[in-house]
Length: 345
Ligand code: NAD
Ligand code: UFG
Image 1 (tube, rainbow, N blue to C red):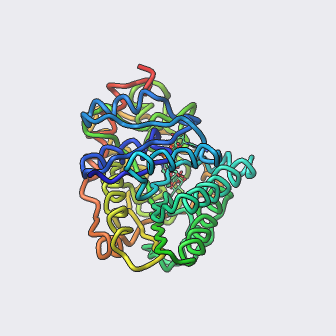
Image 2 (cartoon, rainbow, N blue to C red):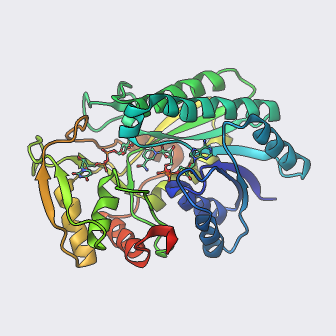
C-alpha cells in the first residue's frame, strides 16, 4: 500500500515539483492549497507528468474543521495520513515588513492549527519548509545548522518561530518527529518545461526576473549593488535546482520514519556561492539571449554572501544537490520560453 501524505501548498512552485518526486518514490500525496499564490492548472500538469491522479482539497490550513474532516476521511478509507509536508506559507519579505500580522497569522497560526489537527488525528510526522533566512547576517560562512538564529524581517521570524514550535511539539513525545528543511535559493524548473515558477506581478527574486527579461516581459535587470565584498562586487547566493530540492523532501519523509530524534533541521543547498553577474552570464550562455543590466544601489536588508554547509543533510538524509548552475539555467529557460505567461498560457 502506498503511503499517504498531506502536502499543504502542493500547488506552489516547490510543492508541485515535490509532488512529482513523492509520486515517483511511491507515495500518495493529498494536496491542500487555497490557491492564494497558485492555480489549479499546476495540479493538472502534475497529473499529466506523473500519470497519477492527484487528490486535491481546496482550502486553508487555518480551517481546523476542514483539516479534521480531511484526516478523518483518509483514516476511514484505510489510507491514514502518515506525514504532513508543509509548504503553505506567504513568502514575500517586503510584504511581511508592511503587513507582519498577515504573515504571523498564516505562517505561524496556520502551522499551529495544522499541528493541533494532526494531534487530534494522531498524525505524528512533519516536514517543514524553513529557510536559510533564519540565520540572518552571517557570523561565519558557510552557514552550518549551529549558526545562530537571527532573522532580519517578519517573514524570517515566522520561519524561526515555527521551528521553535516544532521543537517543543516534537518534544512532547508519542513518537512525534519534525524535520525542518532550511532551503537556500531554489531556482530552475522541471526538465520537461511544464512546471516552473510563476510569480504574480513583478518578481522579487533574481532568477525569475532574469527569465522575464529574457522573454521580453521586463526591459532590464536591476542589479542591487556591485560594491559588496565579493569577487565581482555583486551579491553571492547558494542557488540549487528545484528538482534537487524536491528530492530532499523525499529523503526527509523517509528520515522522519526512521529517526529517533524528535526534531532536526537541515540545510538544503549546494555549498557553492554564485554571484548575480555569474548567474546572469550562465543564463545568457544557456539561453543564447543577452540580459540587459543596470546597477542600482544595494537593496535594503540584503547581505553580501550566503551559502550552505550541506554536509549534515548528506550524512543524515543521504541527500546532496546534483544539478549544475548550467542545468538550472537551461531548465528555467525552457519553462519560461515555453510558458511566457506562466500557467495562464
Ligand atoms: P509558493 O507561493 O509558490 O507556494 C506556496 C503555496 O501555498 C501556494 O500554492 C499557496 O497558494 C499556498 N498557500 C499559502 N497560504 C496558504 C494557506 N493558508 N492555506 C492553504 N494554502 C496556502 O511558494 P514556494 O516558493 O513554493 O515556497 C514553498 C515554501 O517554501 C514556503 O513555505 C516558503 O516560505 C518556503 N521557502 C521558499 C523559498 C523560495 O525561494 N521559493 C526559500 C525558502 C523557503
Ligand atoms: N537581486 C538583484 N536584482 C533583483 C533581485 C535580486 O540584483 O531584481 C540580487 C539580490 O540583491 C541578491 C541576489 O540577487 O544579491 C539574490 O536575491 P533573491 O531575492 O533572489 O534571493 P535572497 O537570497 O535575497 O532571498 C531569497 C528569498 C528569501 C529567502 C532567502 C533564503 O527571497 O525568502 O532566499 O532562502 F529567505
